[in-house]
Length: 303
Image (tube, rainbow, N blue to C red; front, side, top):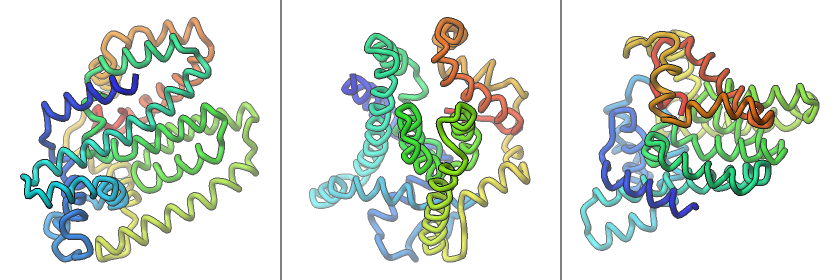
């Protein structure tokens, strides 16, 4: 089943190798890490910083994993464009690897037949497979989100909280809504106490905040918490609306039908027939609804 994920995602990667402006920072950052190394003065973001700063931690990890193959590309003096295929494929494999863990956790709860349908539906839904190798901030964080959900399903509180903390503090602050809703379920069902939560979350939060500030301040040559500035710019100042706005229900009548295709209509049936499905679905629906208050909307924000 994992081979099917890889096959379909490779087809998308080969068919559409080029990137959009939203992907430019992470792609250029991976290029600079691989080709300029510690020569930070040559990095592209000094001349083209973008509207808000982004974290270098994701590009550093992906570049590190991709570096042996990129070194082979350079040694053979092949076109540098092959390096773009390699870093995108590396990111895609990270997503697929954590998706495998998530699928295994689902299988333990719902059974083999369920996960067969899970794979069939996922590979035929265009957007997720298309996006999973694209260097968007929303995809750079995807392995951490899937790892957090894997930990949540397996009742591994440490894995869930640490993965969530890294995802929220380093990459996408708005995930505090989605992952926070899963956390609230644990607290409400008394499977996790407030005391244990604080004992796990406080060290995780301090560590990842210190990590992103320390590393990213070096690259940006100023004291910075990138995701903090992104959250302030997009949510507090609502500056993202300058790139266009959509109606409140746009995610529900446009983005989700395009992203989920015919399986969109199976969601209410699943929630009606199996109470276990509601625990997974309700936080996702509430997340999309709460995120709808932000006027600027894109499918990638909720993917």
